[in-house]
Amino acid sequence: MAKLKLFMTRELFPDILKRLEPYYDIEVWDKYGDPPYEVLLEKVKDLDALVSLVSDRIDCRLISEAKGLKIIAQYAVGYNNIDIDCATKRGIYVTNTPGVLTDATAELTWALLLAVSRNLILADHFVRFGEWERKGTAWHPQMLLGYQLSGKTLGIIGFGRIGRRVAGYGKAFGMRVIYNDKFRDQEAERALGVEYRSLDELLRESDFVTIHVPLTQETYHLIGERELKMMKPTAILVNTARGAIVDTSVLLRALKEGWIAGAGLDVFEEEPLRGNHELTALKNVVLLPHIGSATYEARRAMAELVVENLLSFAKGEVPPTLVNREVLKLKGE
Ligand code: NAP
Ligand code: GLV
Image (cartoon, rainbow, N blue to C red; front, side, top):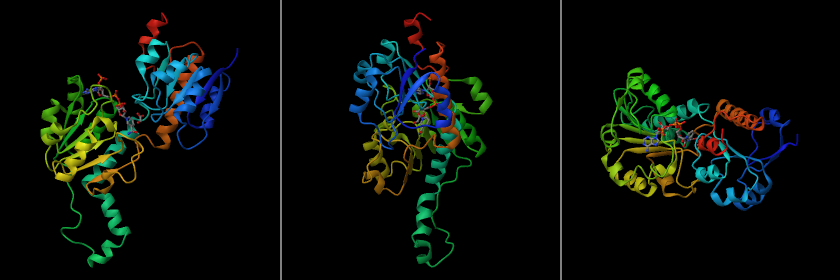
């Protein structure tokens, strides 16, 4: 049987990818930076399979050029960079990597929340750049005060895999946890000891708000002026989901004018964030370069799942984490 032609927009883990060799001829984009869109447009023309990242724009123009493409295996759980409807209409499978990065992303969410609430980055700079030494005291009652978590209310927007894991950690910190989602899950409420709220109620009641919905037409700029003005002036917003869920220009005003106390951001409307972006001048934010799933464990497990999906496809089976199940109807399965 002839091998399938696969292009990967980035090098993953060669020892894991080895399992694909009996089925696929693999070409890898081996540079650190993104393959330019124009290069991708050319590459996809004679492909059977594509492995993509969140930073690759897989729009309908690109999909339409890919006449022989049969599967897009995304190395991420979120897939807002892919035109799913367009892929489905053309009978192309789209797969993602859910579950295996839940712990990593939930842990990073807590790292951000703690970093903002306890001024960890400022405190590190305080020591590193000699400010502590210059102050002439080892300990001062007003030095770098932050907000305690215990006894506070944590509001979770999007009660899926990551949102639920974050909720569990919130309970461990002694917090009251409330959530909003499209659907209320009373069984999970009982199991985790959390309460459901409308989005407005959640924003008004929470001391910490953390976002875990996917980016869709419905969630684009879900958090704008009206929502940020509802939050407490002492509240902290954390976003490890997608940048465009929050209106950045309004968030900047909120942070400068004290509508909220601070923000922890792993994701941005435009990535990479410019080094001279206005956000970088603010002391009440912690900014990370989209590293939610960046642990050795999660990234290897994501690669394993990409491989599982590609192997299932090559054997004529339904890939285990197929996103667009409607494609099966089209194929009469
Ligand atoms: P998930 O299990 O699908 O959870 C998302 C939850 O949000 C689901 O319960 C979903 O409900 C709900 N939801 C969707 N639209 C909503 C809306 N308009 N209002 C309220 N709730 C809504 O996904 P996950 O695995 O937790 O991942 C969540 C997102 O995190 C991903 O989509 C990705 O963008 C982001 N992420 C970022 C990183 C990073 O590196 N920073 C890493 C991993 C994930 P339904 O299931 O009913 O649609
Ligand atoms: C990362 O952002 C992901 O969606 O996995």
